[in-house]
Image (cartoon, rainbow, N blue to C red; front, side):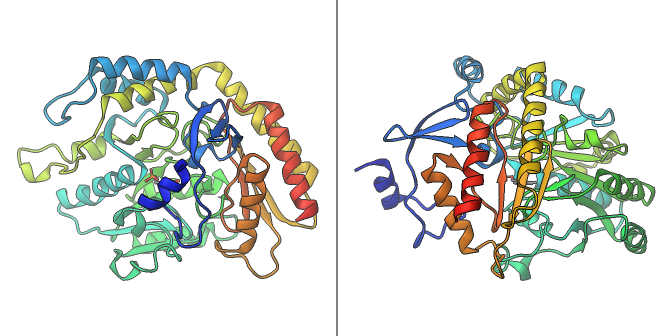
Length: 421
Ligand SMILES: *Cc1c(COP(=O)(O)O)cnc(C)c1O
């Protein structure tokens, strides 16, 4: 039996209707932007394996650093103990974040980084003796699949089985020139109840690569600051170069109180989550009263091997060649977007940095479950490209090491799909 057959006997996959899904493809190795199946077929990983892989697969430099760390210290309890990779990663991360981010709290994935951020805000007000328990979030947001993260995410087909159990969140539209004043007034009206405002900066990823302007997010952040409402910048997806700059907040003038990271953090090598905060938040937990402690942690919090992977990824990330690659991909995307803009099958096309999204014309069937989605997914797999449309939104989100030839092959194949499907 091959991997795929053995898998079907024992494994339940994420986001997969197991009754109707195609059998999974067994992958045996990766190199650069490519992954290889059991027959040696190469697939270009044009979605960076669910948006995490930023430097390509099985990167030798990251592998070397991880292997070294494994022989020194694989894990240690992080309450009462610390270790070199965790300290160094915190120092280096803070050194490239907005100046007022001063403390790093580790966890082990994006959803937990969000849970920590939410708890920091809620308990801040609790510790201060104020009743502020409501959260503000955007419609169509996605912040993760655990209950707290799901509660601040938009209500959808994915949450419907749990909707009654999710805590109260005030949802607002994305800001633009027309509604910004109305949004500010709405926020001011709720300010005594609101603990925090959580957002995906510039791009709502899972919601369909929906993009909005930095200028109006800036205004909302400034307004929340003025009204004493904490802001949580969820950079789980946008962090580490995706939007063209190091972090999406580098496009902003006003900075958040809390930031969350995970996907690109270890270059896609290990699971790790980080929540950072200002001293204002951190200080509210300092007390002789032990009940003011942030009671949160995971078995694998700050795992040394994951921190070593993140440090190695950081070395590659701050190397000027990475920014050059990001700029190169952004320029290639822009040229391709120009080329297909106005095609009768394309309803909209949008780009932020290395993210290019194309909304396909589908007639009436626009849901995540649109049949076009499956057709496109299979078409690109056949051509040796991993592209996983979100409903009728096809997007390219490559590792930064992808070659220009590989990118152009993807564009050509999309062009053919547009003309033939
Ligand atoms: C993926 C994602 C998360 C959740 O991260 P996981 O590691 O999948 O739990 C949170 N926020 C955003 C913006 C994401 O894209």
